[in-house]
Length: 174
Image 1 (cartoon, rainbow, N blue to C red):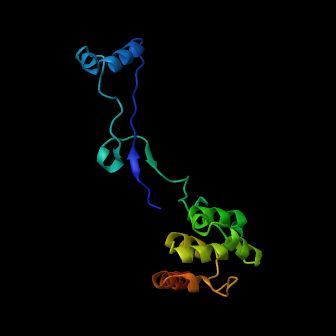
Image 2: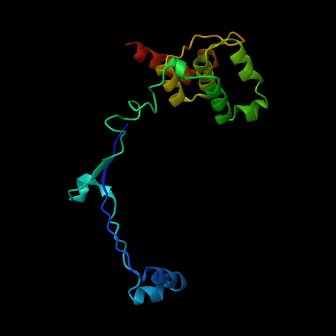
Image 3: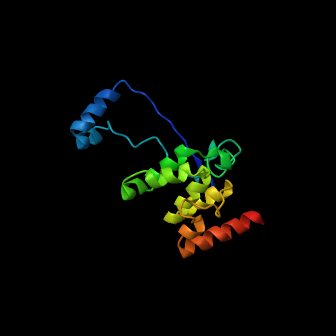
């Protein structure tokens, strides 16, 4: 995950006339500006730290000293971290319920004693969802598991998706 360094500088002053100035500004922004009730924001622009030329707090959109994978947000799930709920959520998310009109196909896969991560791989292969395929293969999904009809994730995938699965699986094995 890429991190983006940036510097924030904030300053604010409270004033007793703040409420009156805000009300006047809403009624007539031009008059408020002429009378000096509106001032430029004191929030400086957010720019990359390397361009700001200022020394101050810097943020790196990271999670402690970990990236998203190390923090368990993406890619760090194992095979047994996936369950029936994940299959149903993906089925709904990809609009498969709308297309199928029923959960019958999903239930048939779940009732066949196929591990949920392998079912997800089959569904993602059918959809050509490469980021999801990558995540599932990292988690230990098996692309040679057969569904009710005897088809594997590779059988369900289009040619480019099939090549992606085999290529990515080969890089994991190396």
